[in-house]
Length: 415
Ligand code: MLT
Image (cartoon, rainbow, N blue to C red):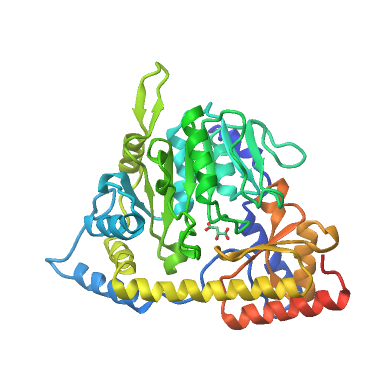
């Protein structure tokens, strides 16, 4: 029989969101009725009209002899690369070349796959709590030892993201090869300032680390002075990779389109000490393992940047951010200690009375029929915290917060 990849056996339980889904299904089977889902950060608003029009027009084109297209360019069609360059980068004073952008079917995939082009002995740093994909994919690749009793894998450097540091850790004092940063942060909703990101870039250049910067939630940043791209920071072209997505900013979680930007200046080393272009390695991987995002989807993504597209998607982001405000204020009024939610669609809260994250999950589900995400699912430092997502209808968000307020005020258990 074929030997399996035994590194998979080190993984802790199942992936977080399927596990939540399993528990919610069991609850609904046992108790009937509906629940309000503020767990996984999945968008709920329909696609903006201008995006639907672009999808339909591209589908019609594909049905004609002149408009039909087969395999697309692996890195993306020029019309989308140019729109990204102009609107996501040029508008922030950042110059990125078209061949430094790789259009893909999602930032989850990109942030999980990027580790493949680095050596298996590379030392990895992550914040704790953290988006589980960064850790699990490094475990699968054999870059770690076993997990300890708290769930921390040997060989990974965990940087606690705590109330004391505003859930935005400083660079470590020791050197690593790869450091994953996510801003606006999933799960805590914190955002890294230009100054903090500047310290990360300076550190990475000094120790020779590569920063993997996940900016999937950049559209939710409200304060103009906060950086949306790591390439707004001087020197980042020599040390950073960036991932951005259409999923949350334009409702593409079921449509699938994202991109990864790797500047030509970014280099790693080979065993003989020679320098290797990271961009070229990713390009090689992309060409071997990926056959481009469908034409119709790239046309839909292009429409996000049209004047109407920018207006319509900005309205959706504003809608979710109003949800976030209501969650933050409603939970605060109910006595909870809350964080995030002002430049991100996630609200991070302390569980009441020091309850464990999963105990609070069960209690919230049974007493209010509201689903959130246990903070401990994002790492040991998330224990005692809980994440509420702002992605849902206004009606459901208001109802969820009213129920939580009633349940917890009545019990007098706000934290
Ligand atoms: C989340 O809820 O953390 C996100 O939906 C995860 C993702 O985007 O993959």
